[in-house]
Amino acid sequence: MGAAALAGINVLKEEGILDRVKEMGKYLGKRLKSLEQAHKSIGEVRGIGLFWTIELVKNRQTKEPFRKQTEKYAHNVVTDISEYLLRQKNIYIPADKFGIWIVPPLIVKKEEIDFLVDSIDEALKIAEDKVI
Image (cartoon, rainbow, N blue to C red):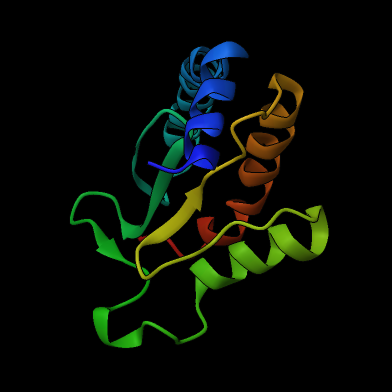
């Protein structure tokens, strides 16, 4: 292993970054799971640490996605949500065919998580009238 990689690992250990990731990851997960109750367009929230995804669906019972496999690059509700977050909130949230990804930096603060989740909550209203 290179000297730079070892130095990076030492910084993670010495500054307690991984412990902070666990703490902030639990908080982020709890906040995102609360959105699942508030929005019918959420099929599932899943993740670990600071790596989460929100699956967006037309129908929560059948888990029918907003975007079909063959429509990977088609404009739809998922891309509308991602674009809203970027344009209105200056937050880059990648979207894939099934939902959006929430992957904040390892040094994220609680206030930043609150802003992020509140913004996602607002953006999810775009999908609400399209849910069966």
